[in-house]
Length: 272
Image 1 (cartoon, one colour):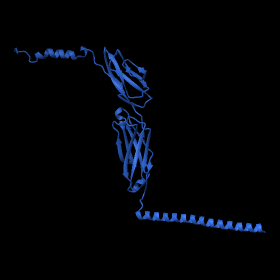
Image 2 (tube, helix red, strand yellow):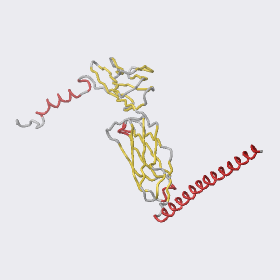
Image 3 (cartoon, helix red, strand yellow):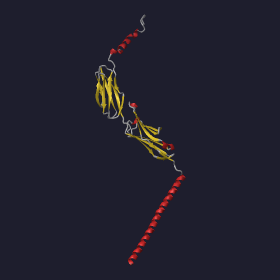
Image 4 (cartoon, one colour):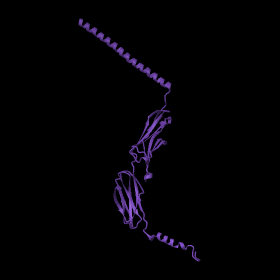
């Protein structure tokens, strides 16, 4: 290196070129495209408002690309507001703008859902002895997406069983749980809660709960008590059958006796 030359002089040209390339006026300005909301989950059949905008001061063109029915509500140079309708299934819409010959877009995924319309709870059997098993069954119909559903079986406020469904897709969601009956169960209401969690799709949690059901719990009879009951029933049945037979026999005897007296009187009348 020649004497008196700065050690950084060899970097001067690359740094200058880099500064030139990175300067705002060196090329086309970057711009952004935005769509709002970022996520949307809807019930089929309604209408929703979508905003489509860009940071480009003077875009060449822009709009919303979709197969759905769309209506422009408001618009300015850098944004447009649309109303979408007739959503029936999951779909994707695209907000796009062209600035200085360059096009950018951002997509919005629209998910459809059906809230639980009917939550039915059934106790089998409804009458059960202490210490005997019974089954709680809950059915939830006409809802989607099933992977976001959670069914909770409750005894008053106590959680007995929780079931999720993951990627399965049966027509009807069902949860069953078998437990042993206790004396205190007759003092509790049993119910089923269906929870559709739509937060991951941009929505809220939708809950439905079944009508409460009561379980009738009774004390099981001892063997000797059952034997006594069977004996008493058998004796009463025997007495009933015997009384019916006796009534029949005495009735037939009385009828024959009366018929005999009637014939004797008739003969005497004929002789006279």
